[in-house]
Length: 347
Length: 275
Image (cartoon, rainbow over all chains, first blue to last red; front, side, top):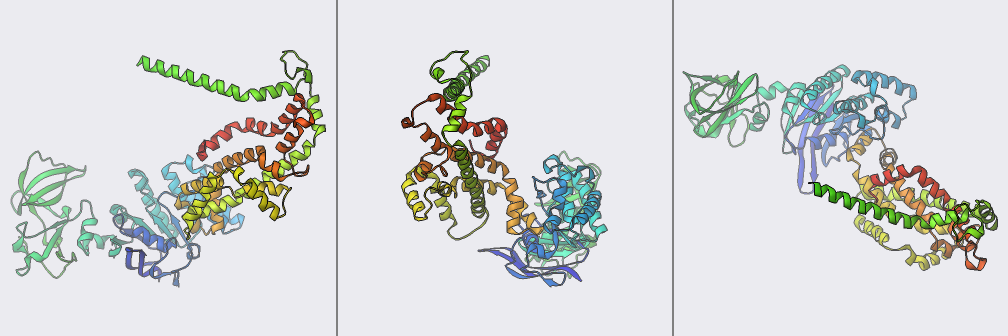
């Protein structure tokens, strides 16, 4: 059974529609990520699920019950906020116990759960500190502890790692994922960072302009992007979307309607060659450590190529690009939708 | 370079000597009161370093007028005003800061207008209202016109507005009602503002004179300031030593409190943004 189901939910403020007819469902115990660029409606969707924002249209089902108009507390969920939302006047212990105290949980239960949770997130030594005396990562842990101590089956997270530095973010990513699996929580996690989504999610819901662009596992999004937006959003560097005619690839396309399609190839699926393949000119290189992202140019189309090791390009050099037909994704130029019926020929 | 530092030094020393001068001018009456109150009457207007010290002026003042009763009245007045102000201003400020309702900006405009009107202008109007309510010559009548303080509403609204929305959201998720959010999030976070406003309110109403003089006419309601004025009125004979002793009695609690909590006072004023 799905833990959470959104049925055609919209959020309308006057003339603007922030979330437009969004439907998806999330199974119990799933780590779901709402992914998208800023302003795509992912945070608004999360706030509507939490009950902090009213739902303009549609229906929200949580655990089989209609919760469209229920108050946040009735929905039995926890939430972790971007800026942690710790109460500055309370110490760590009081912050973690805040919800239990509001709900008047018996004192001995509070203590029991506190010691368990404090141990789980590694805060035993810091219980009497004020939030101002904690580092970013420790504050994040307090926010997590406050969310899990309620033992709610659902936890919502709104860009919880965006204020941390890269190294700490990686550590917390692993910890949050491990905690979610150990506790069997259903998590909805909002982020604009596709790497975060790919590494943590069981299911990714990609949003753009208030609509769901694609939903699926990280592999599905990476291997079979449903639209040009999904193709360009997932992966670093993003997928190359090129016009076949401008790149002298007309003959690889079906005879009729060569100009109706875009072809997408991931930078990591292209190899550089001296002898065979498509003629191109290398213009610049971005060294990343393990590999280098090279910018190649065919006529006026730029194509990114990911190649192992270090490559330096002092001045433009000509080369040839190669890829397998299976690596090619075809999209309709007019709608941006994936088209699996069309096959390309090798060149 | 050197000349700039020099010039800064000079301007600093001018500023500080001006400050010392002003402070001296201000403290002069207090110094005189201390001198006169602790010496016999014949030394009240002349200075002699080794004049005999005495506490008899205080005893006489205490006996001649019902200061104990005046203290009680002032204490009741100041605390009742402060408590009601806290409640009313908190509620009003919360709704101005966080709720949308029709006529909100007009209502807030009216509150701001109240800030610009000197209370003395309203003495006659207030007296009529109090007499219509049948409250003339009661402690409640002294406090009532000041209880819905525009200053307090404004100050708390500004403070509440600076409290991040996320904290309120977090409290809502944890199941807090509106009252609980106010009580557990907004009020504790606005503590410095409450302290600062409390100080302003206490010192203002402790020292307030004209309105209590108009509205009270018996010992059981008169606050210290009015009692002191009657005590020191020319028709009851001018004895500077006893008058200054009575004055010191009247200002002592505030003075002692200020000296004790000076640091906290200044800090909370800085926090609350009042200078």
